Length: 379
Ligand code: NAD
Image (cartoon, rainbow, N blue to C red; front, top):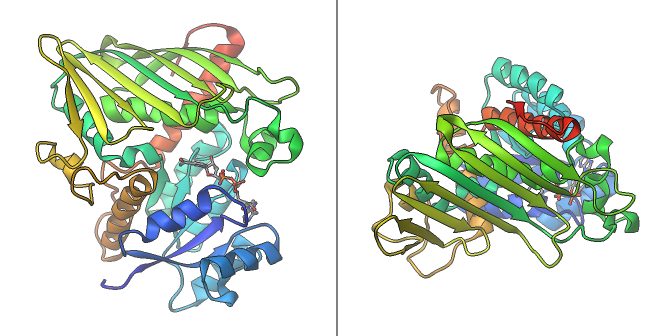
């Protein structure tokens, strides 16, 4: 198929955060074009967003149901939809899309609740269509390098993991001002039961399992609500046990005043360790038990094949958040094109899908249970 894949979007209306990022990322490699959308629950705002994105006026719909019905009738209808709405819509929109024969790229978390993701898992399996999940950090070249190092056993058996995801933007009761992103994230009905643990804890959790290749087996978490009047947790500390006897810590906070998007992972093995920071993503520190520290740079010719495969520019030309998102889109586009040609529906192992979605929702549910019972809980 030598045409671009046609993408629809749900969410991403005027003032939205991640919808426009999805458009930029999806279109970066020239394999995908945004052609339709139900960008808002308001028909007028959907039209306004569509005009801003430069799509045909008749393809900016008043609802996602209307979009799926109309696009399914068109010869040039959308091939897949990206879901960039608050969490409570992820399940119903995915179900409606798959029922209309439209593949799905969803933002995380996969659903609002654990029960919902179990339903989603069945729907995705029955639908047979590709389903991707945008755990953005999986798209960074040096995260792929870290993953390759662990997979090759370069660090020896993994003994300890420390992951932290610190933000400061919810240090004040921003939701009380009506700020859009804070408002739905602080509402259990629209967000689901896990506040900070669901919004950014899931990214940290995913990064641990993605890089180490080890599953978390149990958790002891303490979730707190620091800002008075807030309905969901905004600060979390957790101890982890992983397969193979490794242990870990996971800290996630949205009241860490002054922090921006402070995601940091450190992994310690018998022979060495690695450290990566999202705010300085083009450098990976690798330390050895008996040797000097190495700083590996994105696009270095010495990197693993998997890391080099996802860089676009020569070394020293920084790639970041949008490019990492675009890596996931490139892999999704290849999987979807293959599926359309009749190949088996299989996402590459590097691209998060429904399994990562189920793990993430299990993590939220387990962390809440552990915090409530003040005890270790098994996964
Ligand atoms: P946002 O509030 O900025 O945008 C949500 C959009 O959804 C708004 O435009 C809203 O009008 C629209 N919407 C709501 N109901 C709708 C409906 N029925 N039909 C169509 N559109 C509707 O939120 P956001 O910060 O962009 O987050 C959206 C999703 O993306 C969340 O699930 C969030 O967890 C996820 N997210 C992921 C990342 C990442 O790094 N992968 C980053 C930020 C957000």
